[in-house]
Image 1 (cartoon, rainbow, N blue to C red):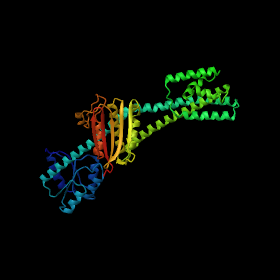
Image 2: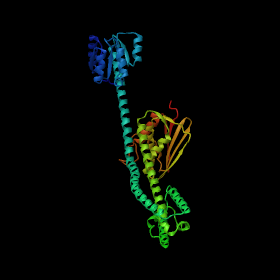
Image 3: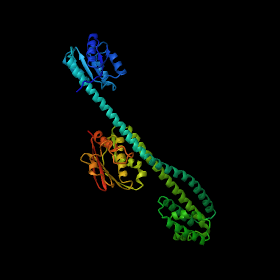
Image 4: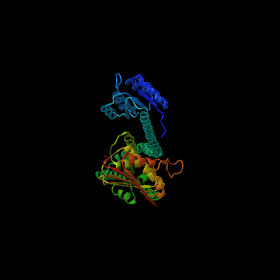
Length: 466
């Protein structure tokens, strides 16, 4: 292997030794900087980058052991290789330096050939360390880039999910004002009717039924609704009631038909019905609007909590993680894409233990897997999420009813930058990053089983990471 050229710091209080080392190192093609004492060496190390330090032990003010200790305590200096060159030719000093993190130890007078070999070996190790650090930094950047790309694809759906309940709440406020006004008018009308105790009890029961009905979905078809509205309108006209027409749609939503309306005439007089129907109708409208606004607020809180979960877990160290919560939070992020035509089946074990993991990284895995499953099904199909405990593992399965993955592609599916999506629709990093997170970061396993009409990814996480 060819010799490596580096930037070397020589730390020695003896001018003759410094000169001898400088001449030899420059002849080998290295650049050299000199320090006469320990503090000067530390100051120079913090001011510029060096590849190797040649360090004497016997130094004024601060000896080589202290220099070595401070270097290893400084995260910016600890990876610089240190070769100790000292006149202290005893085993205790050599062992102490190696234990403190020195790369090598050469007694004075040193053999130039041996120094060259040790120096080249240290330079090669330093280069490998630098490459490893650069690779890890690049992997972190790629992982973050893929996560941002995925979240970017979700952002439009999340914005839609947040805007819908917000807009519904805004509309609901205006409709509530109108409904409260109609209710007040109806109550004024009722106060003039001088209802009997039996009639008041019947009215209260009707309003309680309306409150409960408001909690149920109105699933009446458009054609059936139109027919009922026409029947009610005709009945009201036959009774000579011409002031209740604006309550007809609400009465239909309440489930009122001709039988129900006819039964009201057994309790109330015909001239009392407009105020009675208006009161019941307004009560239903108010309760229905409040229920809709409550559900919208609940959806907003769910989305915000899911986003907070993503943010907080990203900042957290290893922690106890319930994978079921992570899966559910991820589903919230995909709600707008799922409700277009994907049926989700959750098959979670109730006694699932927690795993020690980086929660944010696991969420990125679930995001990548579910995103791919929805894309594979083209937005229409069935998605199965399963969890269970088995032989010391927590197992998560994500299965879709897409077209399946050919066997020849399965062999490459975890390769970086490999994708079957059209150009511009995928980075080819999602599954590779997921594989690295599960296998390398969490000492787990990730397996795939696929056939036409079905693909299942199985993720296995150790319950006890130790």
